Image 1 (cartoon, rainbow, N blue to C red):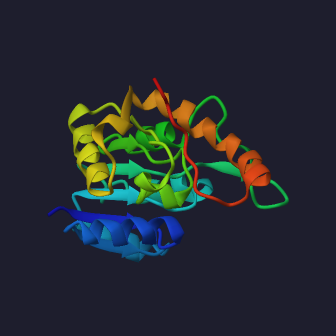
Image 2 (cartoon, rainbow, N blue to C red):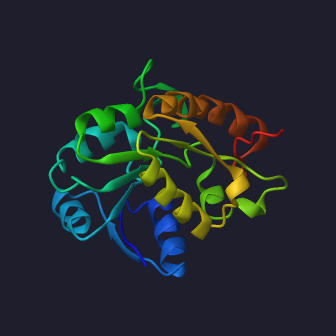
Length: 198
């Protein structure tokens, strides 16, 4: 059992919290208020950022001391939304939210994952017709191994997980969000994920 704080109580955060609780972890969900987030982070070993990506950097940078020595699992994408509410561009072109978070939180081990799929796939990867891929980006090998364990608890087989390397590789997976509006307009709001087949 691991103490986990989930920041964000929307569809993504709620779904992850429910699944990790079922897997036996002690999960606390914080809403967007600073006090709620700080209280949740203080008692956690692992923190999951499931807040809207456009405001994540400011929100988490304010928790710098509370997040020290924690593993921060970032599943958000920072985008500029179009008139229909779907992602139209990246908020940090030439960089990534994960890189900005690691720069702002030097005492925290940031791992990017689960951001290349519709949120329903995060906790039910086997529901797709072919295996999806979950990517890992981060500087700390031990932190990535811990996140691998969490992914296994969510139903991810180890062969479906690809370690891309350092935190700089997150700019590639975050750019995949630009596929999303086109896929949704083409096929509807149905579960999908990026999948690497060999």
